[in-house]
Amino acid sequence: VPTILAANTNRKYNSNFINQLKMEESVCPIPSDRYFLTINETCKVFNKSRSTITREENKNLFPKRVKITTKKVGYRTSDLVKHYQENY
Image 1 (cartoon, rainbow, N blue to C red):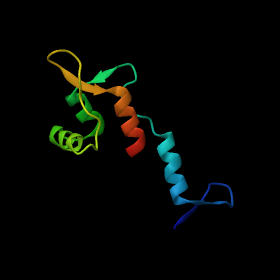
Image 2 (cartoon, rainbow, N blue to C red):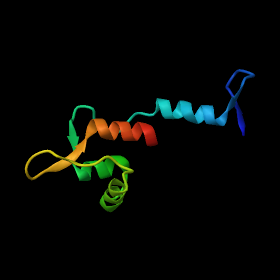
Image 3 (cartoon, rainbow, N blue to C red):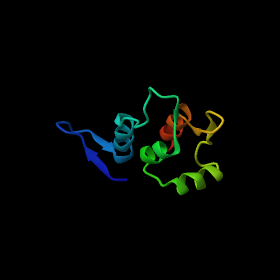
Image 4 (cartoon, rainbow, N blue to C red):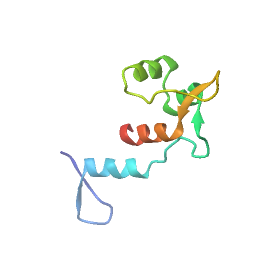
């Protein structure tokens, strides 16, 4: 496992530890002021095509869509945030 020297110290850090720190510092791109996102908004947030998201949803690798109104479906932001934190 490659190691990285921390700036101005003699301590060596495991590269996995550095990557974990970077993940913790990253900001979740999902808006926190919304309860639901549409499929198009979700595609932009995760940088995936609509068909890829649908395929992953069918394989239980992505959160399921929920009915918002009688004619509209979307994704709960809480489910998307949880998915983002577990997988990215």
